[in-house]
Image (spheres, rainbow, N blue to C red):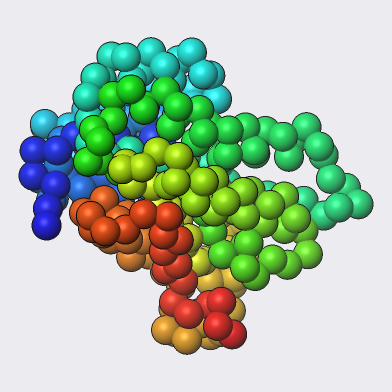
Length: 239
């Protein structure tokens, strides 16, 4: 199975896992549209994608802007939502509820709004692939907000898989991945985290964005998968 000639829309597809997924889909023959809130990010992504692909600048927390995006794109086959900002731990004693709400606005309500706006144009034999994370399975101190978002995304996926059938709805749950998600950390702190995690994970390394991109492509091309939570974490949740 491949994506030859199918249009794939990757919201958040200009860096990290999103860009790797856009590249992987394009290698399968897809016509990919990537979207991000920053023009520079879109332009950079397009230098790594075939000429048949395109990019759009859109604020994914602006429901009207997202609606205009899909009105302009028209019919397509697969929606992927990977949008998110660098993670920030939020200990409960210093929790900023406004900042927590902003995280939900992009990662949860942005995804829900995108699905609603895309639905009139999404082919009935198509798919939606969302993003969660193993924070819902292995939360630590300061992870209350991030774990809550991840849990909400899993529940949303299962509910949409029932409501939107026969359109397939799935979600990828990455483990710790070497990606811009951790750009808010200092270089030394980040590399130390990667080294410590690699020693604790059964596969002996942290993940790369290309590892996770294959999971999104699998869910797009597997016609019997819906309501699936595909965890790709090197076995981290086992230890």
